[in-house]
Image (cartoon, rainbow, N blue to C red; front, side, top):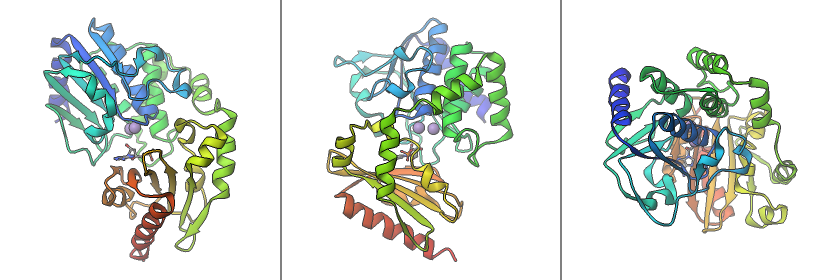
Length: 326
Ligand code: AMP
Ligand code: MN
Ligand code: MN
């Protein structure tokens, strides 16, 4: 099934000329690494490629090879043959990049979110793949698309970040095989890991200190949560990208089954981030009740209301799910 689909996608990539490579708002390492890897491979094929993200390149991922190829979308819309949407569970999470597309002949949707409804003309969704970067590697290999050290490094960061450095249960033998191939192509694991995980700005740790001050436990200590108000974020001068991964400090606590991070946004909504340590607790299902989505063990939503209101609703729903467990 994947061989035939890869063949179709490969053909579309070979036969068209103008491409836009897009991914989700609030991008993570998988989104940005996948976008750059796909865009660079297409450029090596001689294609005209735009690589756009609503946020542009994040400061903390600006070490990615050829990171300057990824920009914010322009104000003036452009015509394309193919739009490549990567790692994006629902189309509206492509944000304002869609407004920069005047026309497109084919939409290709490549993703690993089980909640992806399959928008687009050519769709490949593999919910078992731990990262979109892993799917792209398989596509590149099966279709003999160009790959070099810079592309490999982007794919490595995509896979490393979405697997929690090869620790989450989505990590398979195949993931390690792919990582090994990427290392053989030239990825320097030590250097890339240091740039990815040991290069945070001081304000991120100061943010963690404040977040831990709001930490609370519910459902007999099986639910841990903390929250970030706009006022806190402003006082510390933090960027939205600074909080990626801080939820792992809650997940890492003995006995905690669900970790929750709530972030007040400027638009009257709260960004909810959830992690589960048990496949009996599907946080994607909880987030879907609030209009969000994601994976069984990692999901999110944007919920209208004040921090206190959303916190109450999410905690009630989560505690309810846990009370039905045993
Ligand atoms: P995060 O907690 O932001 O790292 O997101 C965890 C997972 O949930 C990622 O795979 C996201 O793609 C997904 N996700 C986060 N926010 C949303 C949302 N508002 N709607 C749908 N999926 C989301
Ligand atoms: Mn992502
Ligand atoms: Mn991903």
